[in-house]
Image (cartoon, rainbow, N blue to C red; front, side, top):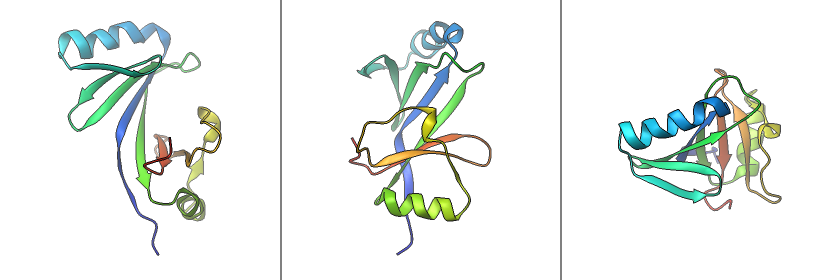
Length: 120
């Protein structure tokens, strides 16, 4: 069986604290996107068929865009990705114990959460 991946429903925009308020205002006030706030401290916006989550990351110096991928079996996907030489970066942000997913980085240093759709 070949490991399958599909695009997820979440995009995360991680920002240094000094860019947070202006960025939220851009999506809310300038673009007029519908705001959602069902993820704790993150502020989200409906972004077409996906959700754009904006959160501060105090240890970074510039904005980072993080993407989400779904897979049917994370254990198999993790093995497949490792064999393909893809870097795991689980230390970048803690995930709940028992979570069926993890963090990887693309060759262009774009962070991706790879997870089973029902991982939460």
